[in-house]
Length: 121
Image (cartoon, rainbow, N blue to C red; front, side):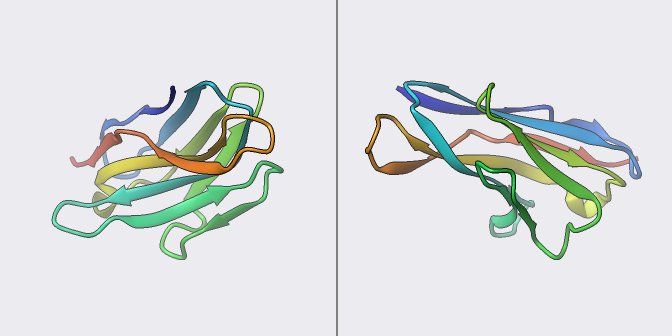
């Protein structure tokens, strides 16, 4: 059994910061890419950022400069640092991890349940 759990969301005032965490656990041999997505109320889910196993990062244009994705491979955990939060950042933030359970096994994308971020004064 493998699971991904996000945490760190909450209610923040505009201009504030949050650090989201995404922890993978269970029977894991290796984790490839870890992605963050978000879904604002009434909108489609959108991709936000990705970090490779080696630490390469890529971001959606809409979050460049304010969001920083990172990971700790020893903890099977990815992070999303969000600065200068705006009301339009409100939504549920989801993490996915591309997980290989056994050596030479296929990689499967495992989604977490999401963590709510609300930016409001």
